[in-house]
Length: 157
Ligand SMILES: CSCCC(=O)C(=O)COP(=O)(O)O
Image (cartoon, rainbow, N blue to C red; front, side):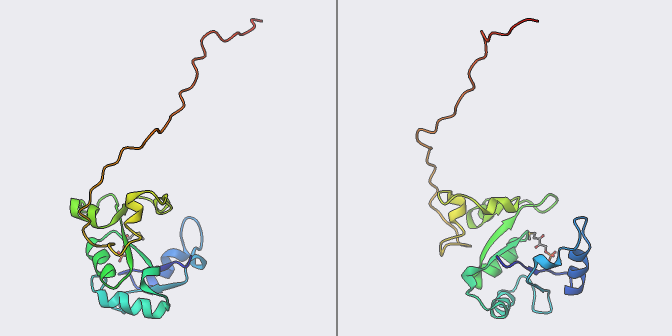
């Protein structure tokens, strides 16, 4: 997976930040860096330019942001987008949750294929309101209860 940064902070600032973290120099984890010299993060044209520079189909790119307007702009350019819910940010609305996968941790991106939220990334409806609100109960999911240990024999010393 190639990881890119598109930030309102300058490329120079991004490199300083990721090159000097508590975990050390993380720059080699990133393929490239973009800033607003390419365009405003709320303008879908910026994402089209980034797609051209990266040289892959837009739907092969997952754009993560904590700003719904940026997610919408990226989706309009054909990218898949997901919202990252972060403490201190403006609360996301029901509509945001309907339109986008919302994650709190990158680990949630590796969801299972049956997960309705995860599927939101896969279809053409990423960034669109999905009015099907199926609420299916899981069938036959069994949880193993630990056996009661009463009666366990223990030798006294
Ligand atoms: C990559 S998940 C967090 C997204 C995020 O915080 C963000 O988009 C910040 O954008 P900025 O332009 O402020 O660097």
